[in-house]
Image (cartoon, rainbow, N blue to C red; front, side, top):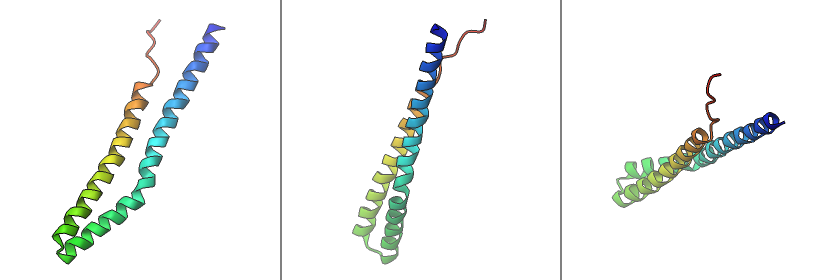
Length: 90
């Protein structure tokens, strides 16, 4: 009976860790279209020779890119932190 409860706890933990990883990747993927449009705006500002537009667009692009990478990094860290504990060989 205790073995069955332990198995259920492990499957819930596994479901949580996969769900959080999927949520992190989905959140970053949801940001990709905006990142792409910000990248294009930055490249357009470079072509126009507008130094203030280049600086502002680059800063916005960098902040959004870093935030997406932080979300994915946290998701991966939690995914590995919640992995099942290694059982000693019998």
